[in-house]
Image (cartoon, rainbow, N blue to C red; front, top):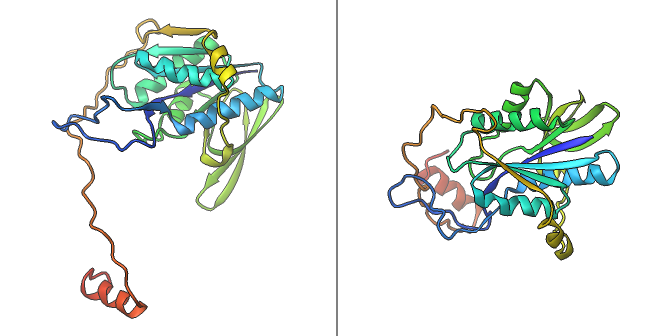
Length: 249
């Protein structure tokens, strides 16, 4: 079984994000970039399926600038077999990315596609669902457990009321939640091996996909600065402040 894993290049989660002076977007100059944490979980799950003998090949794909090769090499060091970069310097929306991933999936013909449930920069939580709609594949989102048996896959989902298990027929799409697994660290030997693994670069034009967007960013603003909290000495004082100062009770 071939597994296709979609990953994204994002600002490292430890970095404090800054807005550009002209409010046109986020300042990415001299900022450390990394593999999206949910995408790391997706790569880890695919590699585990290969180690279990369920998957025969793990292919990672990223839509982004040429510099995203760094994140693809990271995924290769974690255990993926080869990588595909759909190179685009444009700021693409979820639908455009889903269309590009569908084109790659049509070419690769994977039996399972795994994505992180969302990226920590845009936080849209849309691409996996859009890809499923475009491809007609079954989907299991917010997965906390994945079990493959023959041509079926059981996905345990985290929902508001607890856990829900759905049975999907392959080919299928799974989006990963935090509790699915604990991603491994790439060892130095695997990092060196990753440099020799195949990495193919294609363009949206070569895939025959239009990435023109009907949505444009008008303004980006940092959230308002929050005032410092205070400590109260008693419940009575807390109630008094909530009533007379915050006026919420």
